[in-house]
Amino acid sequence: MRAKDPRVITVASPALSVATEPGIWEKAMFVILPAAAAAVMLTAPAPAEAAMPRPADILAATRRVADWQISHRDNFERMPSATASTGNPRGWQQATFWVALTELADRTRDPRYARTILDLGRNAGWRLGDRPFHADDQLIAQAWLWASRHGAGQEAVKPMIAYFDHVLANRPTNDLRFVPPPAPGDPACTTRWCWCDALFMAPPSLLAVSRATGDKRYAAFAHEEYRATRDYLYDPAEHLFFRDSRFFEPRDAAGRKLFWSRGNGWVMGGLARIIPQLDRTDPMRGYYVGLFREMAARALKLQKPDGYWAPSLLDDGPNTQPESSGTAFFVYALAWGIDTGLLDDATYRPAAIRGWSALQRAVQPDGMLGWVQQVSDRPDSVAQADTQFYGAGAFLLAGSAMYDLSRHKVRR
Image 1 (cartoon, rainbow, N blue to C red):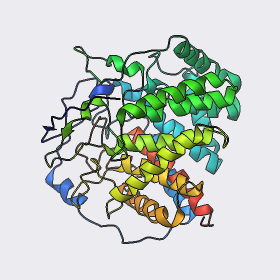
Image 2: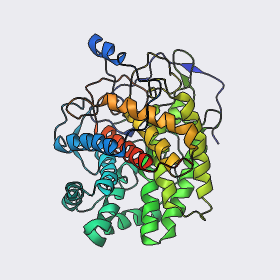
Image 3: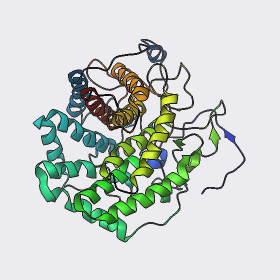
Image 4: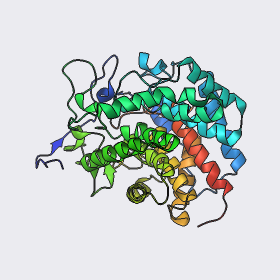
């Protein structure tokens, strides 16, 4: 357990400086909104209560965002934080979208989506990322596993088995303190899951590999590392995760703790992908279900009346900016939880519907998902015209889960 420092550091702004090629510790993008964009953000409030959309309408909206992103996969003009890493299909930014596209492919049976993923994997040689221990480079494994079941066969699995066998044979034992390095690059702690985003990237991949191969070593490793990260970064009083150890003590200008919307969305989205990998008799299943329910209850209270979750979750006043990526992950997790019976329908369904309605307002006329906070590690300013692969991916996950929920009419 971490030692508590009684000192409280008050910060007026959560933004850090931006490097030319940000590492995981520098995922910061400070955007100054022009007055016109700020005015747009305050218009068109959400209806007080919306009905669940029809499954066909949900699917059509989801496909529209997917199709825009696929057609703009090599165009980064609307991604102000784009760097060379943005163009890497095996990196976390794009991998979030490709993994989510597998969910849409399952629901539409559109061969175009399957073909896109298969072509992508073959061109990449079914490799994971180039860093041997970094969680961000392990997310794409979930897309390759899907491809292995849809035409690619074992060739899509072999490289990831070699990758994860190397991890297990050379298991890092460093602590989880997040200390920025003196030179550009990744902090030493990122060989383990020392930032909460990692809980979406790595453990679902390891558990999926374990389930696909029958090799329990991968699952055992994932459970042990997950517990270590939760014990270190989870605030049991707030039922939320700090992004990393740098955020234990800082407060915003109003004295509130800094809990990042997308960071906690990564965690809840990750849980929605972890739990299905576990048999109901698995002794670890209750651990993840309990955490999921705790976080869902807290998220429910933090949703704003307009349906969004604020970039900084405790700063949920009426004038906070829309932010679509964190909101999409929360909608995904809540809709999935309701549909699987882990969350009470009557309690959580209205929140999922409000969140989905908010996401529709973030979709631009051409199908691009806007209001996506750029690559960062904390709450930051957002612009209506900004998008990112991971934002579109979160939208696809939310749409797929909302589609399932809308189709299954029975309230539990």
